[in-house]
Amino acid sequence: MNKPEKMIPVYQPYFSGREKTYVNECLDTTWISSKGEFIRRFEQGFGDYIGSSNVTSVCNGTVAIHLALEALGIGAGDEVIVPTFTYIASVNTIIQTGAKPVFVDSLDSTWQIDPEDVKRKITPKTKAVMVVHLYGLPCDMDAMVAICEKHKLLLVEDCAEAFGSRYKGRHVGTFGDIATFSFFGNKTITTGEGGMVVAKERGTIQRAFHLKNQGVSQTREYWHDVVAYNYRMTNICAAIGLAQLENVEEILARKRQVAAWYQEDLAELPLETHREIPDTVHSFWMCSVAVNDAKQRQPLRDFLRAQGIETRPVFYPSHTMPHCATGETFTVAESLAARGINLPSYPGLSREDVSFITGKIRQFFC
Image: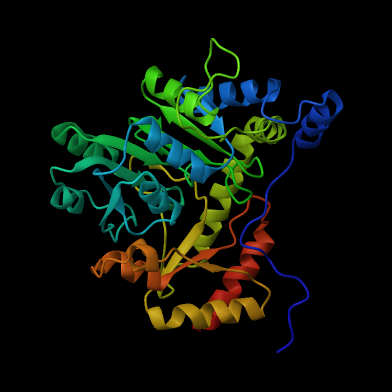
C-alpha cells in the first residue's frame, strides 16, 4: 500500500501571536535560562486567567505532579487514590514519592473518575485523591470535594489536559489543595516543555517553590537546607507561554469549533463522541470517540492512516502496566481503553480538513 503524500497529524502547536518576538527578546537580552522577566509575566498571567494567586512554573507537566505531591508531604506509607484510566505520569509520580497508587474506575458517561469507587477504596492509609480531568472534560468536583472533606483527605487535580476547562464557572485547578498543568507541545497552550503548579494555600506554593529551586535559602547565598530538585522553567519557554496565553481565547474557540464539527458529522455512526456535559466547559484538548465495537478500533485507525489521517489510541489503564500491574479488573476503564480513539484536534484544522476526516470515517463504516 502506498503511503499518503501528506499526513494530517493528531496535533500540532498553533502559533499566531508574538512567540517569535518574545523568544528573540530572550536571545537579544541573553536571559535564556531560569531567570527572566517572561517567567514572572507568564506566571502572573496564568494565575489571573485561572483565578489563583498561588502559582509557580516548572520545566514539564510530569515534574509538576511530583513537585505537587512532595509539597503536600506525601510519601512512604501513604496511599493516593487515582483513576487507572489516565496517562502514566499521574501514577509514576505517586510511586516516585514512595506512596502507593490505589486505582479506581471511571464513569462510562464522562470517562472521568468514579466517585463511588473512590469511596470504596478509602482506607486508613489514604492521604490524598488525585482527580484527572481527562482529555479536557472536568470531573464531578462537587462530589470529589465532598468526599475529601468528609474523610479529611488532600485533593490533587491533574489538569495536564484541561487548560480552559471549567466546572460550574470555575476553572479546574482551583478546587483542590494543589493542582498541576502541562504545556507540552501538544497541549492547548504550549511552552514546548513546561508545567505549572497551583495551590490553594500560600504556604503550599512556597514549599513547592523552595523544592523546585534546589532547596536554596531565601536569605543565605548557596545555602541548601533540604533534598530538592531543579524543576525550573526557562525564560524562553515562559516567553512562548506568554504569547500563547495572549491568544488563548482564539485557541480555545477554534478547538471548540473543531469539536462541534466532529459531533455534527459523526452523528448516527456506531460510535460516541466525548462530549461536554451540563455545568462544565470542555476544552476539547483531544477530540475523542469510542467505537461501539472494540474489534473495529484498530481497523478504523489503519484505514484512516492509509488515507493520510493520524490518530492515536486512548490511554491504556495504568493497572495493566508491567511496573504497577495489580491483577484487578476495571470494567469501564478497560472498555474505554479498548474502544477509544483520539482524532486530529489542533486549532489550525479547517472545516475542509474535518470534513475530509469525518468523510473517511463514514466511508469505513458504510
